[in-house]
Length: 409
Image (cartoon, rainbow, N blue to C red; front, side, top):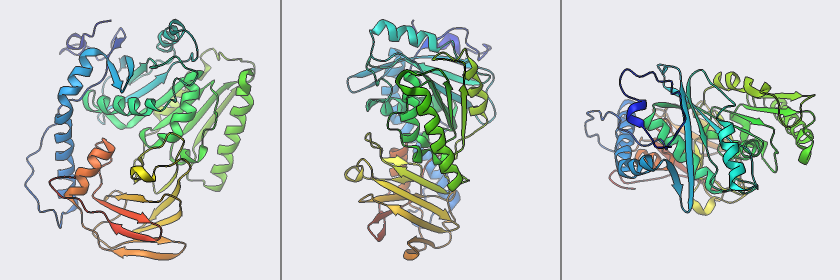
């Protein structure tokens, strides 16, 4: 289907679209504020936040030519992979921006026409009251079509472009999926937890999904009691029990919801549509006070306010870090190098910051907000909400402040 963006969004038209459109959201323009040139040292919180907005706008404009090309073609590309997009918009835009629901279709290791049909069917399953429901078509026809390595990059681009073009609130991005799409949610939600406000898994298989990374991501499971293929039903029960145990140990984390429909098999007759209002009741907290990060076999470079350089991104590397007042408490760290990214949403950068491990103070110092760090983290996160002013580098029991030039990285 040919894109008709001008018609769909022309003045006077309702935001509700009566048809599905294949597209890729693309970079738009943000208002560039008139911001004075600040010295790199001694930035106040207000100055740092203004510079963060300016740097995000600069990054948007750099991406414009490539994004326009992607928009006109109607697919997202990463390497040799292409991912067509279908979307539908619902309701009026709230004051804090639109919601975004990414809905993953079923299918898997089947002929292309089977997955095409599943893609078409997925568009009919979950009507929403407000926001964009985007249904991508998996780039491959493999059994693990929604959790191969390239999917993370494609979804990152999808979210970034939707935030920029469609005024999506990055704290109101949700992921859900049915059958093979549910398999994908089981895998993607833990390894990309910091991108989403909530996640819902329908009729999928958990595989080796790590529940620890779900500490700050509300996660729902919907399963038919008679969905016995691949032991989906019993594995769903076991995964929920794991979340129950984690929440008992950590009552402030691991929000979850579980629905086992005893008389249903693989098809739940749309009983799972209650997932939409459940997810919509949550917004992402990009700055949780405690983060548990376990690298999957598909490694990530960032997870909430923690990040790691390329050579430290290895399967199984684990960090558990909390912030209490102006104290950063490292409970566990097996990363060879762990970066702790800070801003004034996490603690008060006008006062000294300490880093402790096993009750021992490793570092205590007054930190300076840095334009170089702002530039660096704009590129690292590609998220207007998650921009940081200071980066600490933890190696073993040594802590140092990362330094970046204000004019370059």
